[in-house]
Image (cartoon, rainbow, N blue to C red):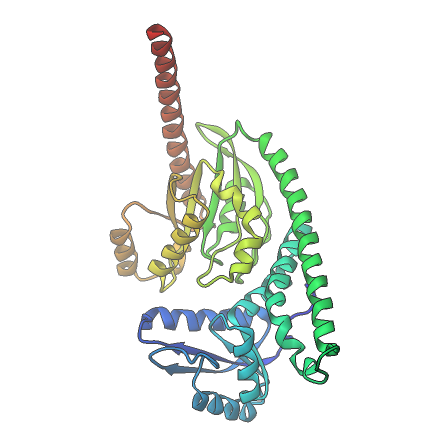
Length: 388
């Protein structure tokens, strides 16, 4: 399943989006440009981007019929056979749109899954992606066999489509169960590994996709984790030891990047990988200083941390890629907007030294609070014994 990509290399695609009355125009523009980056990452060539404004989506086709007919004409003119829509579509909507545009239609979720499938390198990542694909496939099986189920009907007979649908559903459910069990075993091994690190201070790098988390990990730990200027280049959690002057060795983990409107199938499948975040003592929230949509991306990061119950963990806000901002006024504006943040380039040794110092200060505060909590706990127990 994981090898079946929804987009082929050099495939010509058209991206379509819907701006509704309750959508922020700036956020919509960000999503559309992000869709273009996603398509490029998947290996597709974007030949056109088409928007529509409506009060709300059309229930059966998401976009309006007239707009879809316009898209169909554009696809023929541009020799594009794939329409990518910036939305999570139902199986019925995809089927209806394909009839109108007479071409392949994929939604945002399928596109992201395709990218994850291409970038999955370890056994765990492959299992997680395949599990997400199976969860996406299951509700779409009904429509895949509709045309067969209509061929034979009546009392005492079942259409071959219905029989095939039952077989496929059983096989997919069995596969989902098998993949889930495999992930449970991997998670058990992960728990054993974590127990050996319980006494070590744990730091996790979290943030939007393609903000340079892996580059920071390499700079802090002197490691060689894969670094690529692509969305979702890292899918697996990479943990390395880092020496922080003044406090000693810590465990530093790099995690999969976040993105807006991430398919819920992926969130469910990658829960075990992201559990390292909720078990951290300190989070480093990494942002791209050169991005136009810092506020929205930071909000996405906070939303995911809330889902992981990791929003109460102490954190350091780090703006990476500051070397890409040449305008001093933009730098000043950022520093005023985020006075608590630290601004670095992962390739600048002085910046990395400053980040290490900041981490050291947080660890020292953590240790002081831990000692105070132990003293209070000890005094409370002694007082209880005295009262008894």
